Image (tube, rainbow, N blue to C red; front, side):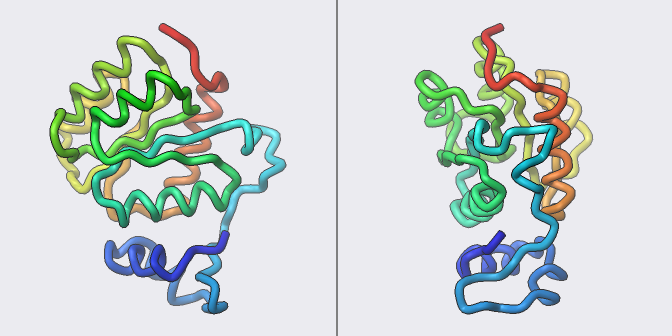
Length: 173
């Protein structure tokens, strides 16, 4: 996977996987990211899955979308809960990454509303290590909870595990 210079800056800004950046060779087009999943994986057809990234921090949103796009996924990005719910009225992603701190609607309300019409897997991304937030998110039907700064390979493993457990793309409740 090749990350743009802007995305690499986001990585450094957020302290995410600095070792990947320091140990890689800058090619002029971006930073190579080791450890990509094989697109011919027997566990998941990469091009059959799209991912919605809900994050008001456009730097973090772009980082995650670049990594997932590089692994063969189609991605969409929105900045708040209302936009996510509007998006989900017409599109059916295979997975949602949902930042815990969003403007407007409370993230737990966003998850509650999603669960009223969908069982799409949802992974929270949070700077908060609060056990209370993690417990609440998972009890409301979230599938995983990842804290920042996160290791990109660990995030991939969690993402793939959730997709493997939920081998359907989108089914109504």
